[in-house]
Structure formats: C-alpha cells, structure tokens
Length: 74
Image (tube, rainbow, N blue to C red; front, side, top):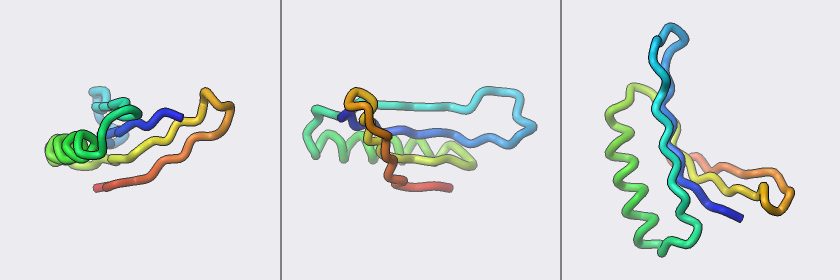
C-alpha cells in the first residue's frame, strides 16, 4: 500500500486553465512529517476558491481498490 496526500483545485466548467493537482507520496514518512506536509498543503489550499484535500490509500500494487479519506473540501 502507498499513501499519498492529494490537493486538487476545482475549477468551474468555463475555466480556460488546468486545475492544480499536488500529490505527495508520504508512505514512509514519520507522522510528524506527514502532519507538517498536511499543514503546508492546507496553507496552499487557501489560494483556491474550491478544492478537495485528501489522503489517498493506494492498493494498486496489491490488486485491490483504493480508498480516499477527505481531509477538507471547500
């Protein structure tokens, strides 16, 4: 299993640009480092009008479906 932090900007349908997407692999990180990354990404998220920030538990290597835990949405 891999663990990712994912911040996805959500744009309206009429938007001309691509939305931002940030993914960080935190699988082998210490809990303190993961918490620090979460705080940094939440700071970045405030620049977006709408976003989803989640922890993605990826089981593709095991042939299983993934699971996402939403941390914050706006």
